[in-house]
Amino acid sequence: MNGVRFLRPAYLIRISSKDLEGLQALAVEHGIPYQTLMSSILHRYVNGSIMDKDRVESRS
Image: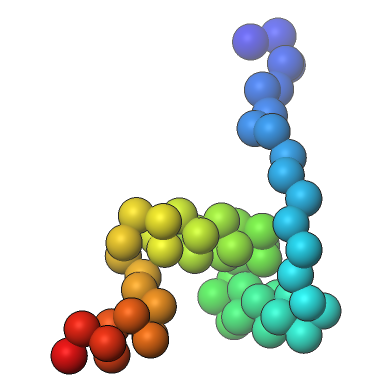
């Protein structure tokens, strides 16, 4: 496409520095960029593949 790249929209979210550092460390362990890991986690949570621990325990 003549070198034209189509980018997805960028969004800003607020995240604590401690959580960001943890996310970055996990991403390094998995060998992927932290933004990719964050996107994957959010996608899986929204689609029900990851559940909140408190919600799972309350169903028991």
